[in-house]
Image (cartoon, rainbow, N blue to C red; front, top):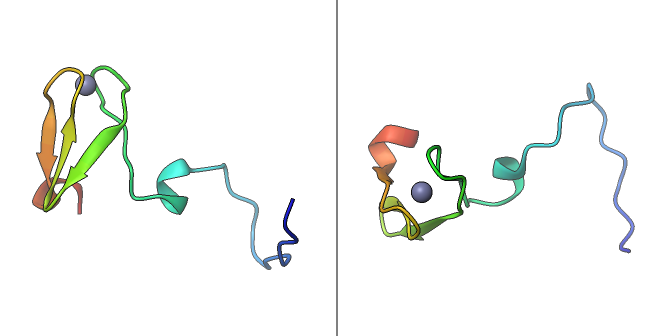
Amino acid sequence: MKPEPALPGPPRPSDPSEQEPMLYCPSCNARLAELKCKLICQRCGYYMSCADYY
Ligand SMILES: [Zn+2]
């Protein structure tokens, strides 16, 4: 384990999208692959462009 500085502020629920750019497919919950300006689900083919998730 690496030491982490205690961050001031209110506690928040753990949000994986906060620490990594990867998002999850809303339909099958698989990880989305980041491809240029799109996030693509390699399992079901779902994708969204950066215009959608920003
Ligand atoms: Zn999917």
